[in-house]
Length: 218
Image 1 (cartoon, rainbow, N blue to C red):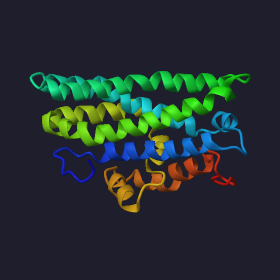
Image 2 (cartoon, rainbow, N blue to C red):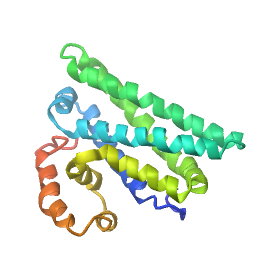
Image 3 (cartoon, helix red, strand yellow):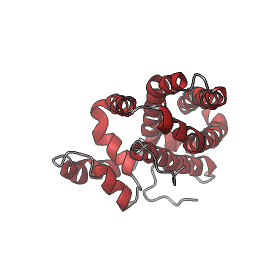
Image 4 (cartoon, rainbow, N blue to C red):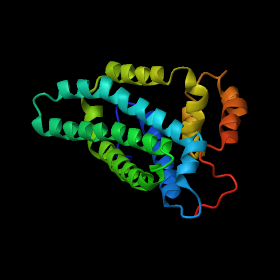
């Protein structure tokens, strides 16, 4: 629910969702290719590994830190508890899908045959999940989670990124609007911003995470 005014700062949540959607678009284009081998692209580029890692970080932090707090706060509201249960059930589908894609990537004989259907399932499922979370669940979170609980969730999310901020931040802001990027970079210590601009972002771009350099989008 992008137009809603939230009590808590949801900037990073929406930024992560936007980054995941951006990668889903790339994954969908790769899965639909007929002139290249999607299996090969997913094996030799870094994009899939970054997407998989940061999706798991995001979902895991929500599962461990956020949904238990929300369930306790909604204990006397069965309809809203049902909404959270549906969201958690959606979460539970993604680890098996990611594992199945990894298995297909590793299978030189049969992996190519299964990869397209697996990627289609992941793209459709995650797109629907992100919309569901934004439209129905984040307003509930905003209403019942305390500022301290929200800070704890954000801190744990950052802790799970660990020492990989130099890769995470360029991934997060890849393709972001100038305004959105400025908001997020403005939250960093001033000494870190030149490092992002001069080192981290160019290094990420040089990786060509999805192997798009020199390729058509068709």
